[in-house]
Image 1 (cartoon, helix red, strand yellow):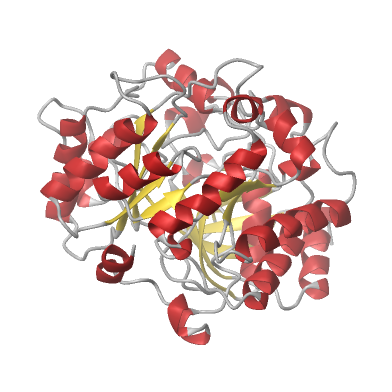
Image 2: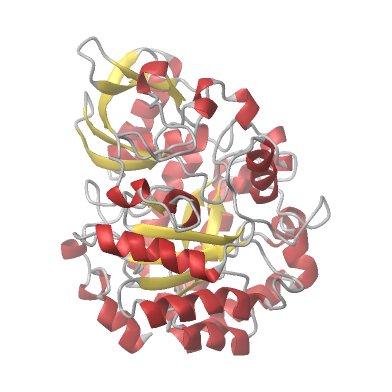
Length: 456
């Protein structure tokens, strides 16, 4: 048995209460996957093939820059893959694609032509690819693709609207040390790809009109408005009004069609109220990393403009506006262990993150997390190309579920169904590792759109 296979199987044995699917998914998210040419479509920048291509919806989520990806840059890999079967008898598991040509995991066609995921040369699961949605084949009146303006992720559940493609926390003294939003913008522009910096409101509405027309089964159930932080103004507007105007336009044109979410800074309560007034119903004021010292080091712009303690106060205040259940701050799982300043042991990192989870969950707020992908153009990615140890990620799933149960809380709304074999959230395994909705408390079931709008 080779090294990586031995590691994942030993962790499966040590943590039998963590779904096997989550162990493999976290390893793919933290370390990426390679693609054989046989697993790449002929889709380049235009959505003309049979497979839904990777849209680079906000960050690169790759372990190499575009020029270093070779064929995977010219023939895009899929947005996500779904794993099933194999020797671990995996239940349906949706995984966001993070390309790493050096990964021990490889997606390739087998002798019979069917795609599989191979680890250390052994096929460990079947691989399904997302079909090209009909709405991706359409274009806006100005010729832009729906994929560029309003890509969908999480197997079609979420419309991801990155309406501001850069961040005003700029340069080494302000940019978050794990974030490549600004570089991702630069590399796509350098490659000549369509990558709109500020998406006009009308273009967003046109794209949503196409999605709504073709998505007859209503697979898309939520939209997220997001982009870089705004420290001054964009289009003459501060952050709440800039992002809020999109929500207002969407809710006026498509009342009740999607659950409206916004990822933004932790803003003062009056601004948060404006988000709610514009029609947003779920607020993501991401706290990024819990430890005070690491927050100051890794998020220098946020520390300078707001400060960690004030950031946390604003998160708690926002629960008065949205209701605690609808405030869902994200953290970047794994950066706690980044050298040279992060925790040296998994025990220390887990203890710190658990403290943050208890802080928020004790107030009824349920954070979620994205598994850190060490993008190579970021300071932390350059120094930590391997990311955090897989053991950290597996133990985080354990402590996350335990803390949720301790406070009698349920999986957050707006993320699709929880449970192994059912979850669609693709950039971490927290939803895969939770009980299915019918095994949780009644409030754990995916909040109906009407209830989200009524109770906020």
